[in-house]
Image (cartoon, rainbow, N blue to C red; front, side, top):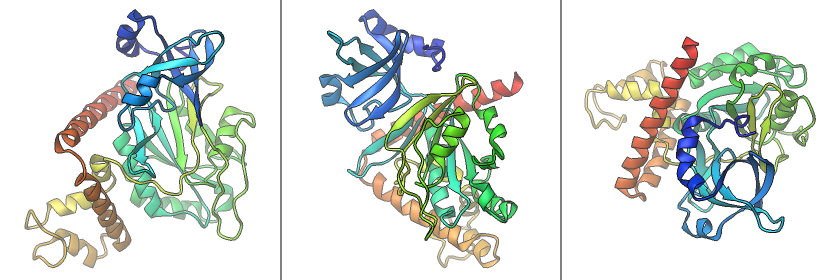
Length: 353
């Protein structure tokens, strides 16, 4: 079962010290209030975190769905106890309501960013998701759902292409099956994808279509404004018939950025390039001579709304960074660079196969 859920030689090396201590490996496949579900070599187990882990875990240190953990068997039929979280290969995170970091999904290869082709389609929100996805180390893929309800799919795809840049875009319909076959290329055996997006984007309906059964509960959107209602109330890692793994998450109305400097730069690569072409290195892009950003705006080459979105997200990150220890921030950035290089190397290796 461990291999089915993505166990590897690299993970075995990370787990070796815990194996020596008599613990067993497992992957978190379910997270609900108060308990976790683990996939282990002996089957699925209900689990809780140890008191020590609860006391000592730093921000984002609690287990999340997709995590690999070291656990001990429960006593007298009780729940297993999670003692350690193994190092994460990737992590999709956001700013929690409390102000700290919340891990939405761990150790995922692909981030399916879902947005419905209805009145609630919001390019500015999608830019937030793209920034978080690029930062996570997973490969972002934009899924425009409910294509059967859109009269001009090609036009909307062209609009989103200006935002998504290098991220693939797929217009799909879980109702008719349009575009679903193309997604299977991302969901080969042992690979993990996470579904993220707002309520009403059709994540659970898509999950059911890929699983081939009504695994996740679904609910209709409001007809008045096209906005969704929360259906999924927990995070769950689902094993697909072809061996891929799909992580479904509750809808998010807000996605606060967290430590997403590199992800923001990747999302707004066009604006970053313009800023680098300004005459002055400290250009504020307001009224300085030789400002490439202002020139692009005035020529209509840069969308005003996209520029305002970039500025807003920059201010949001600047506020967060002003409250963080510089040494910790530098360490996180080094880790991000290492994760990105490793993922690119794996992508090149798959391309040669």
